[in-house]
Length: 456
Image (cartoon, rainbow, N blue to C red):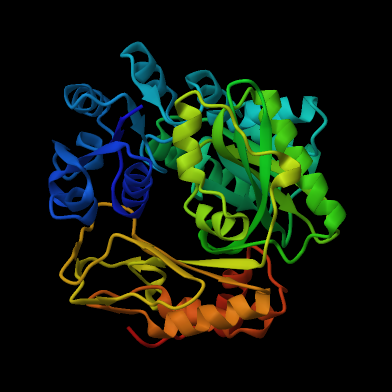
């Protein structure tokens, strides 16, 4: 592998380009007309316009991507996250066209794309799974029967879903009848499939995920866990590693469960096995994310392992030389996602020109972002502008460092989530590690609105 086509945009495209550059691999970025002046386009070895602004005509346009990759002499396609990262069809087309898809095989992607079927697979293998259905719900009467049998409250979830779309909690039969068609419609619109399944609702859980790497021979290692419970609309805002809620025994059990899940699937490349942890510290399998994650830098900070480089090596057929007993975990890392959103307006997305961007710096600080002063934030894509990651010898030091860097970071021209992240860093519940996935929602209800924030 000496040339890789990057089928994505923004900070993850830049992350892949940088890893390629350090490995002596040429990179080609496929970009939409809206991203012609982006930093990935400026820094890649080559660039090819793959279509107009709408993602369906560019970043989701498989024929354009495959054609551009082959015309530029690439041997592989890296999908990043989002867009086509977990699409089994592009993985299959890559294989038929002699291109390497940097990710799991198409068959694995097909399996994990059906979350209900994956639940059954994991339950049959002995992993703890919340009560619920292992197949798509066919009718409202079937949904009511299942919900009654497992007990309210329940969750309705898109079988092909993710990112908080096609997901609703339901407190009782009347609400179920009202919400059921809405969730099906959301799932169809977002994922092209209206299939949904039902899962028992877990009150006040924590969201903990485990990073894994696996090679073609079936060898799998885990690289510890990430705490991802600070969320808005079921989408993560702040992640950290290690989790403050796990005992050493539970940490070992989670790691072993993640490795077992990967082996059951015949998984290859990088991926994440996600769990919910209840108030009694029991954990339950949630899903498998078959791609690199937005929050992968916190794992890199505490392990010193470059996950994107390993993605490329594993896709190239190289064996995984990391040994589980040799992987060490040092200190504590925290990541804050910087989104172009206004928290005071229910996280309404922002667009427009970034008049000034001054990233923070100093020891133990990493900024993954495609921003620059003068950059125009488009209104057609995800609101993520970048991530600020810090490392400290302890969680206390990491929190204090994050307070400093958030105060230093300047983004002028569009509102961002930086002030809210800083407020969370100063909140006593967060610093004490006393939070769950409903942390922000609970604060909103207690204060009669989203927390009042100020600053750029």
